[in-house]
Length: 187
Image (tube, rainbow, N blue to C red; front, side, top):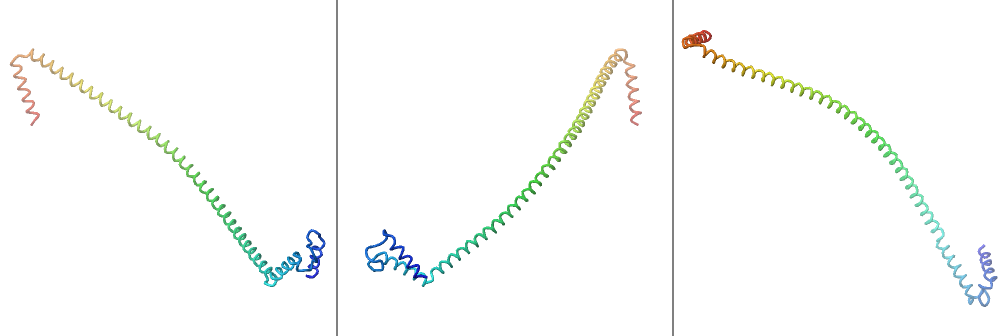
């Protein structure tokens, strides 16, 4: 089969006038024939040293490496997708929890605001009662002071009237009565 392919190659080379060299084709003086022999010798050496199978083995090994890398990349992609799904699920859970916390905080804030309103109302009520109590105490003190002043003025006026109307013996008798009355109350 090789002879046929060599013969076909030789026929192709001799058939084209542009590639033909001067002289007979099967002569060492023809450069095309020498190049053909070199090429065939190169192919024979490659086949002898089993280079095609080595190249095929290297290519198979490289293909296997690429296949392994693709499998590893596929596994990594699946892991990444599962991690992403996990993180998205956790994010939704955290968001739901945050929403619940915010809702609870709003409810507590509303309750605290209402409690503060009630506390303020009761504080205002207590302050009003304290103010009313202070006002009543001030009124009572003012009335008492006015009564005391009125009593003092009345006593002074009565003393002046009594002193003007009494003589010295009436004064002495009154002093004696007061002393006896004080002595009786003390014992």
